[in-house]
Amino acid sequence: MTPPTDRHATFRRLHKSGCFVMPNPWDLGSARLLAGLGFPALATTSSGFAWSMGRPDNHVSLEEALAHLRSIAGGVELPVNADFEGGFATEPAGVGANVVRAAATGVAGLSIEDSTGNAAHPLFDFGLAVERVRAARWAIDASGTGVVLTGRSEGFIVGRPDLAETIRRLTAYAEAGADCLYAPGIRSRAEIAAVVAAVAPKPVNVLVGSDFTTVSELAELGVRRVSVGGALARAAWGGFLKAATEIAARGTFTRLADGVPFAEIDGSFGA
Image (cartoon, rainbow, N blue to C red; front, side, top):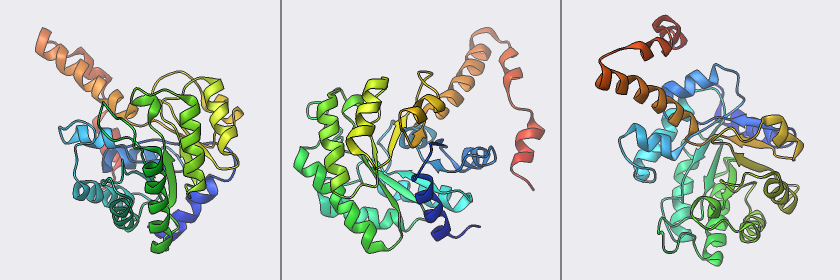
């Protein structure tokens, strides 16, 4: 197994130039299959993990999340970025303490969101949001791990699609120590280009959850990192539900023909 320190260094190098795709497995099996396809890094998905446990997104405990990170990071040779949600705390001190624990799981990167989970007030107040990122930065530095910190602003996916405010927050997160910036939900070329320009030279991650762009188009805009969030998990659930629905509704089994052959998937995991 590649030592964590080497994976941390590899992950940092990936952010220096070019554009790389970091797909999101939801368990160790999907992580190993993705690693076998030649991707340079992986990222966890809070939604995909929660669904695998029969829960909605953001409904797993800190201990469950840490165990999940240890499983993925310890089960593949690639750098793994952790979807660490909001740090499993509100106050900066709590975020920092939890980030120390996350950094010890072997992940090469982690992200901190600014969403509250409260529909009436979906984003943390600006000052608190910045301090939460700063606390994560201090915690990573104190850990000596070299984990890459991503600052996320969630406005576009929590009902506050304000580009100017998103840029204000991402710029502040960069100044507070975030190594990479991420605004899930931005989709247009103009929005993406504006975010890239605002936080340059720091790298930007773009979420692709549907067929609205390509890797080459994002690279042309200066995007360094691409992730798919829960989209691969949704695709897997889609195939599962279509086949199961056919069986339940019609008593036929035609969709089972779309499944990966037993020998192929079994062989992917070795003896």
